[in-house]
Image (tube, rainbow, N blue to C red):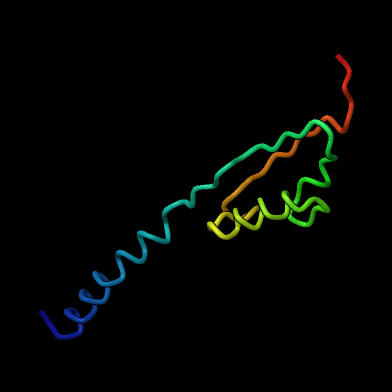
Length: 83
């Protein structure tokens, strides 16, 4: 085996784990938020309600970022209480 072939083989073997990691699909998590009265626009990380802001900050602190590895579906009754 020639020197160049040997170096090429070693380089290829060294890159295999990186190539395999790049091909793995990222898992996207999905959660749903349901609130009976708050509007859907308030169920965000810039909400006027402190507990929603803190909830989204905590998600981000744990590495869950919306539209990157997290999908959030928001639902609200918007205060309607029909039976």
